Amino acid sequence: LGSFVLLNLVTAVIVNNAFAISREDKEIRLREKTEAKIEALETLASLFTLLDDDGSGDLTHQELAQALKNNPTVHETFTILDLHDEEVINLFELMDVSEDGIVCAQEFLHGM
Image (cartoon, rainbow, N blue to C red; front, side, top):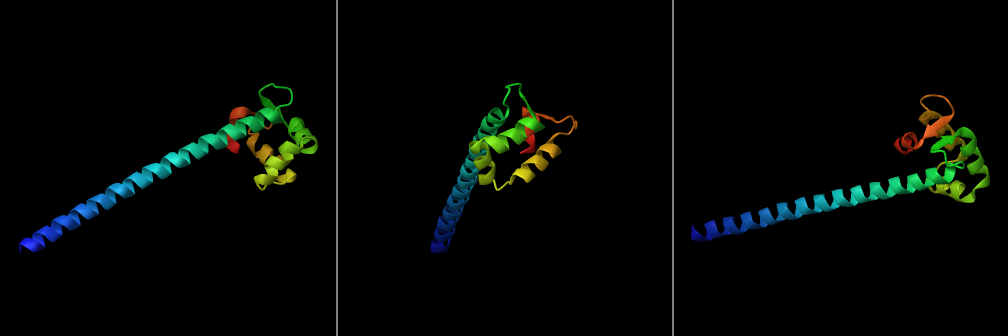
C-alpha cells in the first residue's frame, strides 16, 4: 500500500509539472505572437509612410499607383506579401470605406 501511495504522489508531481510547463509554453507562444504583431504593425506603418508621398498622413489612390509603378521597395514589399499590383489597388479600394479615394493610416493598418 505504501508503494502505491508513493507511486501516486510521484505521478501527481509529474503531471503537475507537465501542466506548469504547458502553461509556460502557451505564455511564451502568446508573447512571441504579440511581438510578431507589433513588428508587423511597425513594418506596415513604415510602408504607409513610404507610400504617403506628400506626407499628409493620408494615402491617395494616385500616391499608391505611383509608388507601385516607380518605387522598387514598395513593389518588392508587396511582392513579398504575395500581392500583385492589381490586388494592392483592389485592397486599397476596399480600405477606402468613405469612397473618396483617400485612406488614412488607421484604415491602412486595419485593412492590412
